[in-house]
Length: 144
Length: 403
Image 1 (cartoon, rainbow over the protein chains, first blue to last red):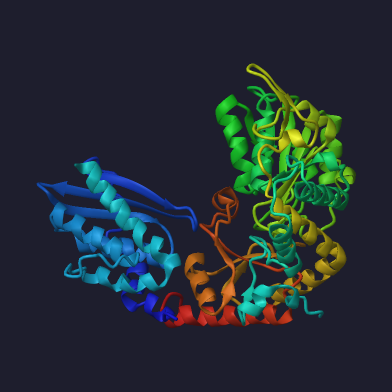
Image 2 (image 1 turned 120 degrees about the horizontal axis):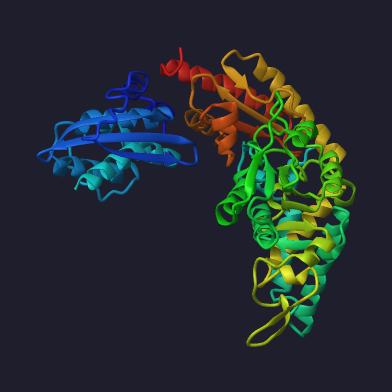
């Protein structure tokens, strides 16, 4: 059986307790997306700002479990500064990795998001680790 | 305590199972499984339509089941309609009432209702402009007759509430409600999904117009429920679903429906499940509601009194007379907590349990944990639940989730 303490690694607890890029700007130069996880009531808002094809800022807010909130926080730090293309590629592969889809590109450097690799052993939590990233992808799609 | 676990094969096939999620779905008894197999092994044909012996015998068994279920709730057999479950029953009621309710009519519901009760009403609000009235709750989050009286107007046409709510287990005094409602020409529809596994239901005594429930919460098969409605009401409403076997005559421009209850049963019924339902009714009858209540009350009382001693636990329905405990570990999201319980082999529920308004508007928490007991649970289960709760709290302290 997968080890539960793997799920609650220090880095996840750190981001859960001290979330980065927390709070929305409600600035019109940002694109916003809201996603809800109906099974547990988690609700996440993501805002992203793109200038000249580059993700210059990501903000996140919402309520949810530690996995959901920490993944929003880590994701925001990971993608800021990347080109839209690189950010999209990274997050699409991240979503495959956490949902145990082995076709993901193993050469992608997930940075701190790699900490969620173990989620695939906890099927009930895949959605928790995914919704912020899905919301972020949606903001990029709306942008284009 | 008597060991009822031997009646449930799932315990044999899952050693150390601690099942505390019976309010979602009860475990299936071997007599139910056997009855379902009996249909597939020995009958396997359609009912009502077949003019050969096998089909006629299957039909006989289904009608026997209907009579047995009717007598179990003190209804007439033609008032007992088979559905896919409580959700379909409640949807069917709302669909059938579309032709009766009109814009401006008021329907009383509450913030503690399950989505399967609330959403069909919300649809009536969106489609025909009925007004949804939320009866205020008392300090124990219960619906009382006094509060219903405060919101009833001359436009009130329907009161739709749960007999026992599915998160807090608050209980409605149905008789008080129907007696007041009928004096004012108001229909009463009761969601009995959480009530009938635990208490004797007598629809005549309760004087309800509609009563809905599912067999899977009573150790019976999934995919089968009952819509009970008074004969005179069933005769005055249109069926929500149309199809095979519910009609006597079809022309290019008209249809003549069958008599009750068949006009409300379009298409082939879940026949095997009806065989299973008959067996589960017999089982509950044999065990008896007194025994069921005594056992679950003892377990809940023990668990609540032990949980109350744990500082990190917050209970939302301390005084409930139900078998449900709604709680949280302070500072730990229910979805995190449930993963840790599951890791220790405890099956329980986390989330908003299809009662989102209760969480957002009443309890004001994003989600809760829910433990529920049924008669097959024993003191070992309750003790293990408390032990694991302490282990879970320690785990979250160790990883720095809570201080």
